[in-house]
Image: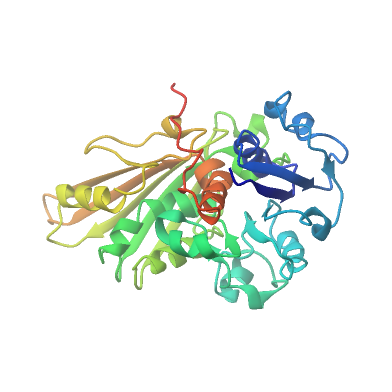
Length: 354
């Protein structure tokens, strides 16, 4: 069996924990080195408690340079915040290592979008548009051969997965999509903040970054890659009292000639070759609990025709785990493709019910 040597830069957060949860149990992966500014000298089993006592969980976190960390690696995962990631990546572009980036630094192709949504400047703007976008349902062939992959954002994944079949069918042309999506607290990262502190978040729902979330441009860019044209998006994210999970509800007006049965078949055909994407039977809605801890995506569609106006409204609902399909698990799907495997190798497992 061919073994791929993997390094992780940014080994202390939830993204790294999720990467390691899937990778250390695989016989085809060797964890080479892990670097971080936090927990230096501790093993990954001590830092990420779900790994404690497992075989290969004795890898020690080191405070070393990016070049040192990737010296013996075939592939490196960058699991750090934006801006920091780009500066680290700049030290690795000339190294003989393939990069999978979990941050937002290289997802966008338009510098103006990045400046508006992430930071006043980009450390290496010439690199925008040079990373393969790591969504296997859209980009598998490009990912397989890529040296550098930008893994999608959590909201961008959950929302786009419910709209890509429509983009391909030409139903996202000169249209407006209205989306409300609820997310779990783990999406805010490992460090507690006022808005994610448990006493505030539990038993609470609140909107934030209303109509101005940083994933909006990424969603539109992804839909345009899938066939949308002149589509606008009104997106309202909601902080939900969950640890994991995203439930996204998108609505749009549907032109004549399409009913619920035809839309249902469109979605089933689009995802027929993707075993980890489940198109729900008509009348059945996706649920977060069914996909929690898994790479699975549940997608459901409903069409209503207004009795007075005849206007058709389509609702697309998706459920994902924000740390797996919306984060590290999707990065591992890219890793799988880059190492000659099926995208969901080692990942396509059922969730925990209830």
